Amino acid sequence: LDSLIDRGVLFRRAYTAPVCSPTRAMILSGRFPRQTGIGTAINVLEGTMTLDPDRTSIADLAGLSRANYARIALGKWHLGVVSETGTLTHPQEVGFDVHLGPPGNLMGHAFDGLEQTYFDYEKVVDGVIERSAVYATTDIVDDAIALISERTEPWLLYVAFNAPHG
Image 1: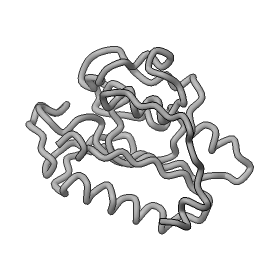
Image 2: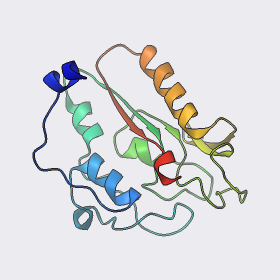
Image 3: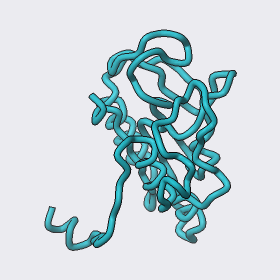
C-alpha cells in the first residue's frame, strides 16, 4: 500500500455525488452533475439521461495518448439507456474499447422483463445483453483478471461494482 501511495496521485479536492449514476459520470468526465446532465440514478429501461459521448471522457484522453492504451470498462455501466434491440454500446461511444457488465442496477426487473439478483442478472458482452448466473462481484473481478492478463501495458481499467448498493 505504501508503494502505491508513493507512486499515486493525491487529490486535495475531490467530490462525489450522493447517488450512483452522477458519481460515475463525474469520474468518467471530470465534470459536476449539473455539467453532465446526470443528477440522479438513470433508468436504463426508459428515460433520456445519458452521459454525452460527444464530451471528452477519461477513456477518450487515454485514447489520445501515443502509448496506445487499451481502454476497458467493467461492471455496472448505468450511464445510458438500453436500446429496443437489447444492445448497449454506450461505453464504446464514450471511448472504451471493451465493456463487460450489467447495464444498470441489479434490483427489480431487467430489460428482458425478468427479476434480477446479484446471482442472476443481465450482463453486456460486446454490446449484447446476456444473462449471467455468476455472483456479480466475482464476475467483474474475474473479467478484470482475464482481460488485463491478456493485454500488454499500458491499459486503463475502469471498474464499477454493483455491490455497494446491496
